Image 1 (tube, helix red, strand yellow):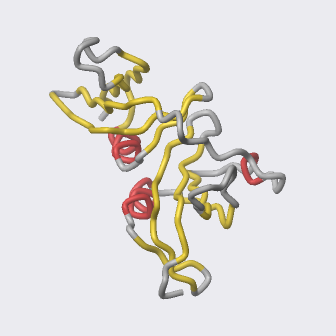
Image 2 (cartoon, rainbow, N blue to C red):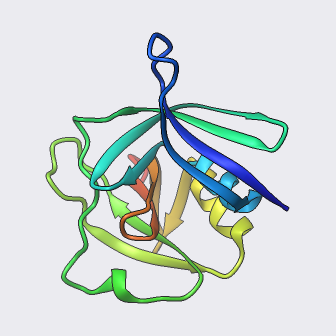
Image 3 (tube, rainbow, N blue to C red):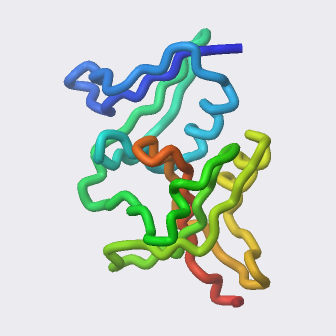
Length: 153
């Protein structure tokens, strides 16, 4: 069933200005977006502060995350590969300008992608990783899972 999703600036004094609206969006996609800490659109990175719902309307309240940079496409061409829902797995480093692409997961099912985005930790290639943050990068049409190597790995 389709619903409506809005991204609004979390500015109570300004009346929560509307940034973006998506009419007739699938609830599975709304769930994926609710699971993300960041939203990238038109070259701007927004940090999710909260999410709400009310009778067919879903709202993500954001603020501009000026200290954050969106992941940039790697020379490997991973961005151009199609098929299903893509989640990039990138290594996060506090002071880094870019975040190395380690792997691109592809899912045919929204639920599988959602479970990854909601995971606090994953094991990849025998190495434990801890989630740092997640984002939906609408400019590139991909979700991103940022992680750091676990101290146990």
